[in-house]
Length: 87
Image (tube, rainbow, N blue to C red; front, top):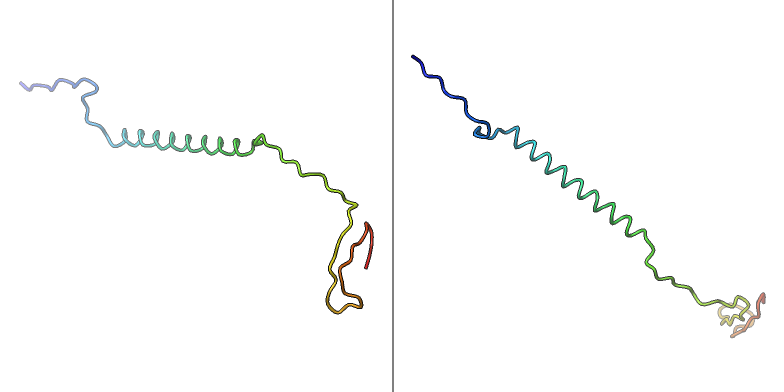
C-alpha cells in the first residue's frame, strides 16, 4: 500500500516570491503616499501668511530734491529743486 502524505495545514507553506512582491509594492506605495502628503503639507504651510505685516512709513511725495550737477554743464553745483522743478 502506498501512504498518502497528509495535507499540510495552511501557514506552514514556504513563502513565495510573489508574496514578497506584494509586500514590497505596499511598502513603496505607503512611502510614496507619505512623501506626497508631506509635500502637500509644506506647500500649504508655506502659502499661509506669516502673521507679521510690514507697513512702510508714509512718504511725502512733494519733498524737495537736492542734486549735485557735475560734468560738461554750463553751471555745475548743488541745487535744491522744488516739486516739479527742472534744471
